[in-house]
Amino acid sequence: MTNIYTQLEKANLLFFEYGITALDSYFDEKPRPIKFLAVQCSLIELARAFASLEYPGLPYADASLYDEARFICSEDALEEDLGNPWMNFRRNPSNGVFYDKGNIYNSLKLRSIPTLFSESPELERSLFDFTLMATFSEIPPSLPKSLSVPTSPSILLQRDLLVGILSGPYPASGFEVLKQSGFIAREWPEIALLDNVDHSKDFHPEGNGWNHTMQTFSYRKNRDLILSLALLLHDIGKWESKSYEGHRFDRHAELGARRAEKFLSRLGFSEEIQKDVKFLIRYHMMPAALPTLPIQKTEELIRDPRFPLLLELFRCDEFSSFKDAERYYDACNTYRSICRNLRNPYRKADGSKVYASRRSDSHFS
Image (cartoon, rainbow, N blue to C red; front, side):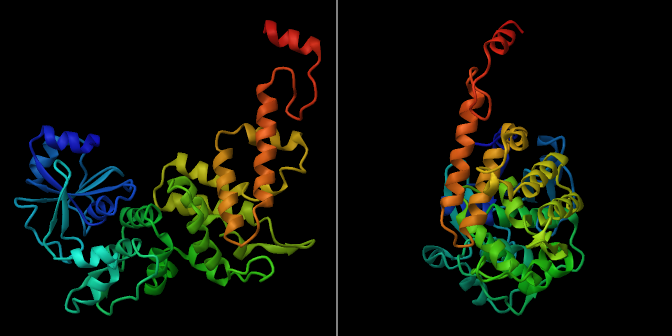
């Protein structure tokens, strides 16, 4: 039970997971950072349970609790119709019982998320709902004709959408939906420009910048938000980079880090997240050269607690280009060797011996 669930229970409020939160539970997927909950109460009652409740005016939520939960309030939350069968799929966290008001179990068994949308042509679909549902499908669904695309989406809606996609099982499907709808070109042009980045087939047989970026998600071992944001944004500097002395995308890591920071700031991500993602993007090319770089240039970075995540970004980047694993494992072996030396009081970071006088000084310091 999360703290949110515990507070709702202490307030004697009946509540249900709905939408992707209920579906994540059904498919036994890792829960996403933001919970979507339907609570059987009034907004006043909910406000008594959460002193820090906010009212952001979102089309899919009456109230919000930071970046932790979105609430729909109703005097009869279980029976309220949320507009489409997938959103009406509920789960009671207290007893684990699912409620299938929209009769979607057959589609769930097939994990066929797009099917149900096409079965209800009269239903106006929300791009937000449809995109997040698409992240359960490995194959991106086609856009329904009646899809409702928001014209002026709030910053919070955009951030919810981005976090919801990145923390889902198949982010590429969600991003393909947004791309088809024109949303990315209009709202996130930094990402849309990846489609204009032509890659050499010798180095990137998977395709252009967009195809490469989408491919990286299939190699994630976990859905860490920092890593996922870095994967999405790691090459956005390529579009404005120039060729220089044989380097086709010279300084694209530095350019991309600055672009990523501005993008994340615009969407209201915390400064801590901005700094971590910027670090990963700025140095995402460095692990490839780690075995050959002098220790004086790498020691500070290797001591950084974010370096293991940088190696994971490098792994996804390498493997998505169908490269063999040699460069990744060479980087890992070098990293482990340097870390071992750093733990040894008788060795320097490069493995050379520490003089006795220096050991004596460190002993008395």
